[in-house]
Length: 87
Image (cartoon, rainbow, N blue to C red; front, side, top):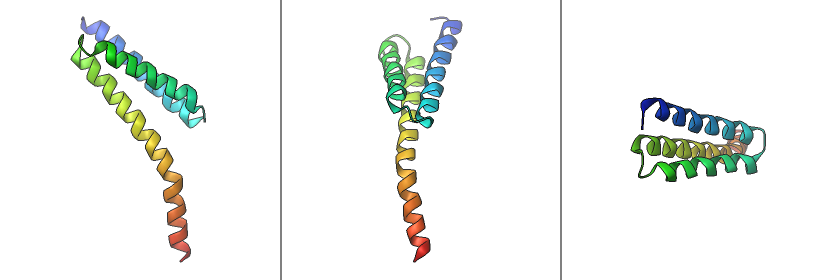
């Protein structure tokens, strides 16, 4: 694979990731996770073809999941902090 094609594919992964985060922030979880599924499809496609692109897609997947988890934990932690400050 040429470096130009590799950079194009990285750009596509990065774009999907950014769109997924924006959708999640706007409350559209379903479409955000559809973007994640596309990233996972790219990861599977690159698995035996290009280890650099496969790793890049895995990184995007991991970053998205971490972001989703941090959003789920944040409201809970905010409540815990508020309760602790009241006592």
